[in-house]
Length: 282
Image (cartoon, rainbow, N blue to C red; front, side):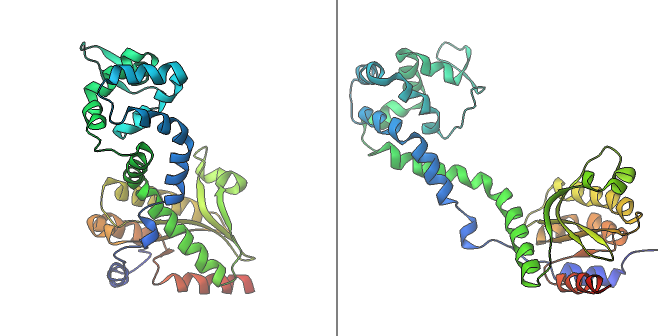
């Protein structure tokens, strides 16, 4: 028997929100500023290169003062190198990017081959600290997918707090021995857990404004885990999800919707709040 009717699913789909992105979503300026502060002294030393026509001599001047200043140069080409990044050098050899910063000759090669030499000579860059702040702002956009998920978690948390519902965050299934019996060694971390006298609700939260294979994987995973958890008396799996990204994975979501009794979005989450409060009265 299906957990929900087709009409209920269509209502659910019609309620999905276009976005959960506030203006604060786009850039984490606190993190960006900290990243720049961490290397600001080195960047100020590298400012010496700006406007110099004899790059090799300028590099040697800095090298004699503090060769470690060049270790931050990967960020000048918008790269975060963990020491494993490989590139093809001017001789056609495959080398570690960081290896170029181990000698003045390597630094000059890096500057020449990347185009930074001409950029610095031309004075089109006035200050490397400001330049890197711009690069960090661009790189921070890569973190937006994670921030979208965190915004959804924060939104749901605020709803729980507003309703005076006690909850735990990032709780592992291993804390509940009965779940280990049905989940096996596949330990699961839940975004929220709400414990009431009647039932323990294990909650997953996400938001998808865009499509992709990830949505199908998530729906498939939850369709598998929910019946296992719900088979244990006193436990229930709850999925709170939203976002028009689900339109691209409608069939897979509908399949999950027919299997999982407790699926909510930000519009009908009030029904879940009501359920929890009723459970607390038992």
